[in-house]
Structure formats: C-alpha cells, structure tokens
Length: 120
Image 1 (cartoon, rainbow, N blue to C red):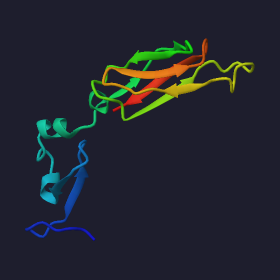
Image 2 (image 1 turned 180 degrees about the horizontal axis):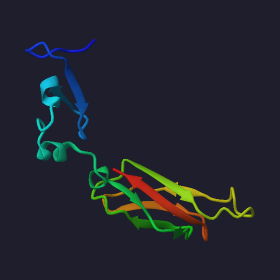
Image 3 (image 1 turned 120 degrees about the vertical axis):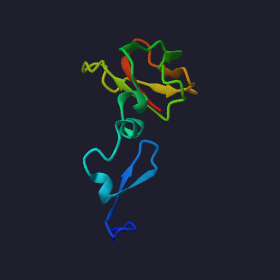
Image 4 (image 1 turned 135 degrees about the vertical axis):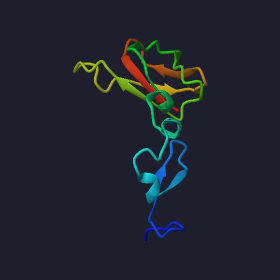
C-alpha cells in the first residue's frame, strides 16, 4: 500500500547509498525540486563503490600481499584463475589469509596466474 503525505499526495521512497530510505513526496518529484548537491550526496558512484580489480598475479606457494587501495578491510574477495590451459585447469589451490585495510592476503599454487577482485 502506498503511503500518503500531509497534502494527500503519494509518497515515494528512494534508497540511498547508505541503505537508508529517503522519503520523497510527489511534489518533490517536480523538475528542479531536488538539488544537484542532494543528488550528488546520495548518488552511487564508482568512487563510493569501493571495488578493486588487480593486475594479473602469479602464485608463489607462500602467503602473498596484494595491495587493494580500498582503505577498509574488504567485505568480500574473489580470486579468479586466468591460466585456463587444459593441462592446468583444476590444479589451482587458493587459501585466503587475514585481509587488512591495505592488502588482500592469500596463498596460491606456485606459478598459477590469477586476478583478485575485492570490494568493501
């Protein structure tokens, strides 16, 4: 069921980047009623998304640090094998360490190529 504002117009809700709702009444949907600064403050941008994709890395068989530049401990990390030659498919081993606000820490099979995707 829609919600109504004090003038009897339907309210709209928009989710902000921080996940909180912003109540917008129908009259606020008129052209020019939302300022550029309000839009910019709540807009989803690549800079706010906190996503990192590494260059291709080579496993050493020991713990490796891959600097991510997110300035926060990643909420999730995905290691993607990039060496897909038939003789090596299925021969990867990846063990994640304790990631930090500067590095993704992992151990990958010696000589295996991979990329790291991390997001905050």
